[in-house]
Length: 497
Image (cartoon, rainbow, N blue to C red; front, side, top):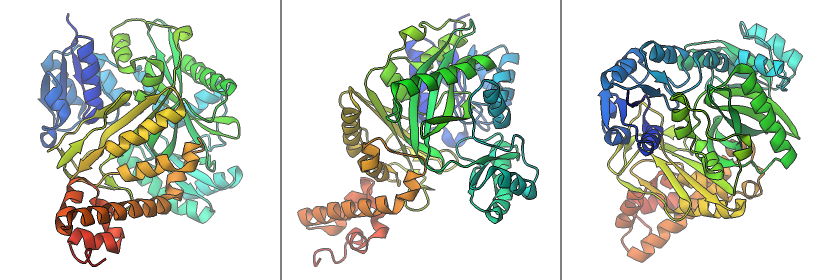
């Protein structure tokens, strides 16, 4: 029977999977909700089927059957880490592109995953060793662990259900909120308590396995630049590790993956500080930041996922995996980073991607597209490769300077400040850096936009027209923070200034 792939997700990752399938000669079908019918993945797929929700297992499986699909790729988000979905796909006679439901259940339960890591001899941070019962229970455990502590959702991910507490009183208040958020996000209110590590680095290892027992790692990615515990800048390899540490970390990841019988693509995540690695979780799916690993290894992870699901063995072993150069990724969201990272839905009025050698753009939007308020607001990912970290970073900065998204607020200016930060340039980024320095970044963005605004006003002698052009080109979100730029955007007083 000829292969056909149903893509059970949306946005830029759905487009990425469509392109990989096309290169393999596999037709694609995808799903969409009524308010998402104009998305790029719907326009690019060979077929598209309506569903009531991307989270509806029955609707998505029915779409797979109607389309005649033999394979189902969940991408990330929505049903990507749902063992119930994987089982429903298999019962319907299709193949799930991902790990087995058994492995997904283990990985999705952060408590069980930690126990598996401990059994494999991998160090974890001191933790409660079980879900907590209530605030009083949490406080008692935290006193034994020592403050500060972090509350984490057992079924968590993406920063949801996570809280840092530095005192018993703060922890007692946070537990209830964390449980509510975990229930809302994952349908599971259970949380546990873990010793909080101040200013660590977040480093993860990409693994790939096949059904014949082949298992390799593709080395590590550094993901320390985050907001709200969600990554916004990634790079590969990590600038923090020595060659010995790199091999040690990769060996730990493979050891754990072998122990739990991992197949297909997955990521083993660690915190790193002062030469020590601490296992945190397994992501049993394709990661948003997989592209930086592809750029330094030359391995197409998405194609490999599909081929492994079709029963093929990995086309290479560990000896074949080599890295070359350095790669960065910056995630561009429709959000205002200086207003609490508030989402900014709306119509994209102007869109320009960067280009040039060794620049890659993964996107799911276009000029005229309306950013939907009901979904994640990730618009595009800009990636850059270079033979050295310095050259890759210079290329990444240039690419961001060329990227323009008008009509909605974006985090592009914030990303430019992060990449210009001397500590980032020196490879000293850490988890929490963005929140700590957000005011500094805001002031730098404001100064740059004031200069740009005044230059445009003096050049055109028509302040209102200049303000309109700035709004169209997406630089308006910051205007409210500066009286001068406020004047300019309104077209009043700038000539006198």
